[in-house]
Amino acid sequence: MLKYLNYARDLFSTPTRNTTQFLQAAPDPLDEPLLYFTEIDPFTIRDACEGIQIFGGIGSGKTSGSGQNIAYRFLRSGFGGIVLTAKPDETEQWVRYAAKTGRSDDLIVVNPENGFHFNFMEYEGDREGRGGGLTENLVELFSTLTEVGQRSSSGKGEEAFWRNEQRKLLRNAIDLISVLGGLVNLPTIYQLVVSAPKSREEAASEEWQKNSFCYDCLLQGIALSEKGEFSPLQENDFRLSLNYWINEYPGMAENTRSSVVSIFTGMADSFLRGVLYQLFCTDTTFKPEDTLEGKIIILDLPQKNFNELGVYAQIMFKYCWQRAIERRSIESNSRPVFQWIDEAQFFVTEHDVSFQTTARSARSCNVYLTQNLPNYYYVLGGDERVKHLVDSLLGNLATKIFHNNTCATTNAWAAELFAKEWLTLTSSNMSYGQGNFSGGSSTSQVMEYSVPPRTFSGLLTGGPLQNFQVEAIIHQRGKLFQSTGSNALRTCFPQKVEP
Image 1: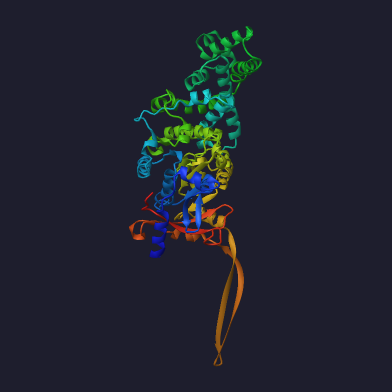
Image 2 (image 1 turned 60 degrees about the horizontal axis):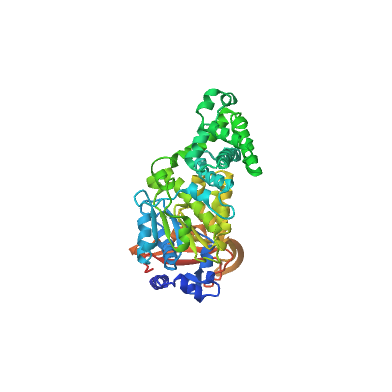
């Protein structure tokens, strides 16, 4: 065992080449190995771009084992990327990774102290090019954020209705502000929504008309329409918005309207004050596209310190970053990038699923780490729709790394992933009678798990008593490992590694 562990240590400590070198070395840059799981089983950039899910219980070594080794290879190879944080020590950990790989100058650490700002509304609204600034892009961004606020109420069977009503509210607010030529930002949308009429009677009252920002916007729109200053498309959008704010919105049932508004204002209020306003609603000093030039953006707003505010902010930036990577031109910039999400259950949204389906063509290496499968179900809501969301995401992550785990649900799921195989069992019997021995044997075939669930609870977890080696069992979609001839590879990752 000691010989095997020393071999694993030497294997993973072998330096990898930088981005420029691999572009010259491989016929297809995606086939350049980042590291080796065994001497003959490489893990390539292509593998990384097809997505990675790392499971491991508390103390299993998933972060210091496979996580650390993969992170070092990303940095050493010149990748840019974003890091979402859930625990207070994650930023310090990545600062240490960057220092050891000579990437300290590429760090952008976003927190209230460092002076980095990103105005996400202006960024999404002012983008040039195909799809830039369209209402639906902004609606989708807000819809992604409000999805987080609705998690506690998911499973009620009416989620589609509330999502549609929420999107309709946002769409009509954004369209009204846009056709008037105003700057579409969060304070303006918020002011319009909270000043909208709560009944048709109020919409007709002089008191509301005298004090309502929403009414002022509608009056401006009517004046521009009567002067013929709208294009046909703007005229259509304005008429739809006018009908919504004067008839449809105030005609909603009180409970429906108040629920739709509270979902939006609950999210928006977080960005209109304090830390989030300072970081994400003032000016812009960095952008998601900076990662394409090799920057490493660490969102130092850990969930354990900033609670829901930290989750809102990081999901917002993740969404903007994913959209930017989807728009990239590989021909003009082929640098691989990564998205690193530990405690991934707090940050997963529906857009992660669609993003992963195109990640390889965008050269994005998406890494999700969590303790167990129930984490996803519990935090995201646990209903049937959420289960399908999680199953879809995991199905699109081609590499799955399983560390020590005592979660029966996760271990059973992993065993099913590796599937079953026919095993030949031999049984024998022996008897003694009248001074003679007699016996025989028989064989039978049974279907058993190729990697039984109990296996995962016995994997090495590192530390000095285990020579700082962390064991894992790896599965890669559609691949048989050369060293085992099967879809299961049991290997070790060193905790003490020279990047």
